[in-house]
Image (cartoon, rainbow, N blue to C red; front, side, top):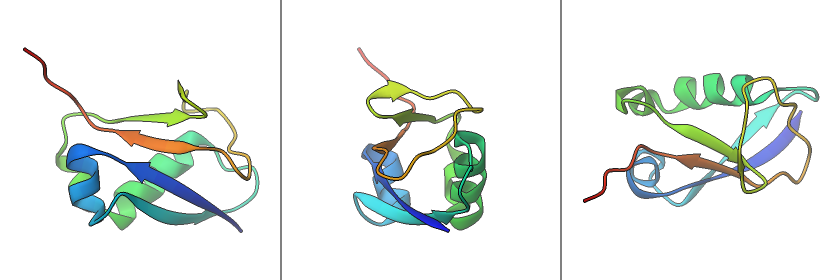
Length: 81
């Protein structure tokens, strides 16, 4: 299992109860696997209309394989005005 640190901002940080959380996933896990685990561990994330995951400062595609040391960030929906 590889331990990944996931950063969170705004509503996602409130759901996590802090600015980050740790997620253990097997080697070869994808962004989709991470999303599923986050929803299992933090069901309130499902209440957000949508949320994105960034990997190393770029929006990540579901099929991307996570690597040890990746910078992972949950990006909740934003509104502007």
